[in-house]
Length: 90
Image (cartoon, rainbow, N blue to C red; front, top):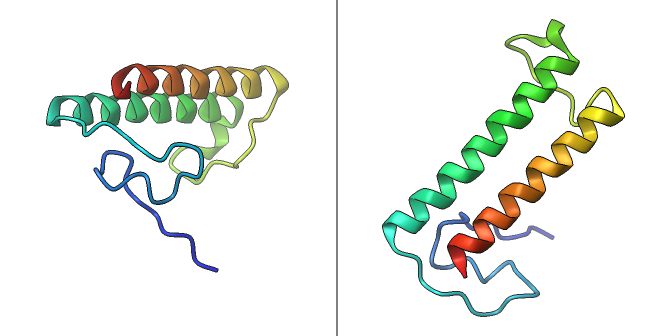
């Protein structure tokens, strides 16, 4: 079974979300803000992977963080991104 993927800034983003069936249409500034928040979160997570795996410079990082502390930090980044996006899309 292939799951349909939709860009998070797309006006069609309800097709792969079983919990929320209606979304407000975002304007271009809101879409840009959401993309920026997610990009910054991803950059911060990559920094944590570098801290935990400095030998991986320029390479692929593992999917899990090296320590519990970095794993918790990543979870908090993901949560911060979620709440910021929630604010933008409400």
